[in-house]
Structure formats: structure tokens, C-alpha cells
Image (tube, rainbow, N blue to C red; front, side):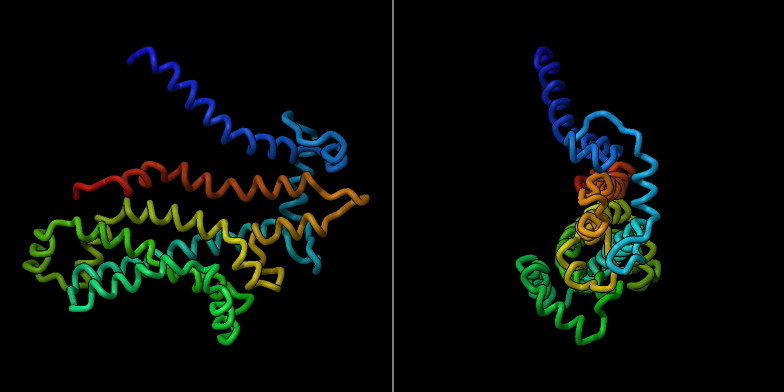
Length: 280
């Protein structure tokens, strides 16, 4: 058994390198000039254009209108990711709370109706969703970017299962103390759900951050472009000497990776605990 441990570590290290190597290559390549990348291809060693490339990507005005910057797209992606994650958590917790604790006759039926929305991802209902947002005048707006993404049962399912594992004794104790539904939700349910909230936040933030199709359809105003939406546009627009700005494209890709990775690394302990914890 002990002899297998070195092999296990080797396998794990090789797997980690396999996943990390493309990111390292993208970062190293982004520090070289576009002409050098065009001439020599991908790079594994750092270049001399790190500050120039990332400074250009973050601060230089670009796009068709010449008004959009990488910082603006980063901000839009953060608004979409955080707005989607927070909205999803709030709606999911309220729906799961009603289904578990109010116990009306159609609760199970309503849960399965909500659950079936997992069979209808945004890509399936994208045209009706676009039509509704257009009729409401929410195109090119943060509300239009975020609200249609909230209609999914993922968070409701996780919170429902979590709430069902909370001992009934807590409910009885709160009732004896005179706590109403709102006070019980705020003082008991939310504190107990911290790890689950963290886990769901990570999942939903990464999902919202990586959205490409919906922002591409919803935004024609460049001031609402997200980072994912803008990478292709920047590569098409920022061209010098007929050589695409490969370094800036790689820099944008690296910047797009950093926030989701940072969120997962910072909250990984809560994430694992929230998905595996069963004793409440």
C-alpha cells in the first residue's frame, strides 16, 4: 500500500501539470509582441511586453466605437457573474423555503414543475427570452443580461435538499420562542446555510461569468460587452500591420480566467463543506 503512494503522487502531479500548462503557455505568450508570436508561435518563456500588453488591454479604448476598454468589460462580467449568483441564491432559497416549510398541498407538484426547467436551458428558450426582453425594453441593460438566466431549478433543488436535512426540533424550538416565518428564515435558516450559500455562489458565479451566447445576443451597445463577448471583438478590431494582436487576445483570455479561479481558491473549503456536509 505504501509503495503505491509515490505512483499516486506522480499521477496527480502529471494531471495538475496537464491542466495548468495551457494557462501558463497562454500567459507567457501574452508577454511577447504580436509580431514575435506570429513568427515563432506559442511561447513557454516570458517576454518583454508584459506591462505594455496588459496596460493596453485594460486601459486603451477600442472596439468599433473606440469607447470600450478591458476594464469596462471586466466590470460588466463581474456585474453579470455576481448579479446572477446573488439573484439565483435569493430566489432559490425563498422557493426552497416555501416548498419545505409551508407544506401546501401542491408543494411536491410545484417542485417537480420547477425541476423540469432543468430540461429547458437558456439555449433552448433563447428566442422567446430575447423576445420578452425586447418587448420589455431591457435589451442592452444589466437587468436583461441577468434576469432570464435566473429561471433554473439548480439552486432550488440544492437548497430544498439542504432544508429537508435540518432537524424538526429547530422548527419547534423557534415556534415555541414565538418566531414567525420571516424571523425563522433570517435567524435560523440563513446562518445554517452559509456553507451551502458559498457552494452555490461559486457554481453560479462561474456559470454567469462564462456566459457568451446570451450576452452576445442581448448586447449591441459596446458599453455592455462582457469580457467573453469582447475577446473576439478585440481580436478582430485591434489589428496592426495586418497581424492580429495575438498577445492582446491571450492577455484577455488570461484575465478571463483569473476571477473564477480566485473565487474557487478562496472559497474552496466552504465549497467542499457545503456540498458534502450532512450533519446539521
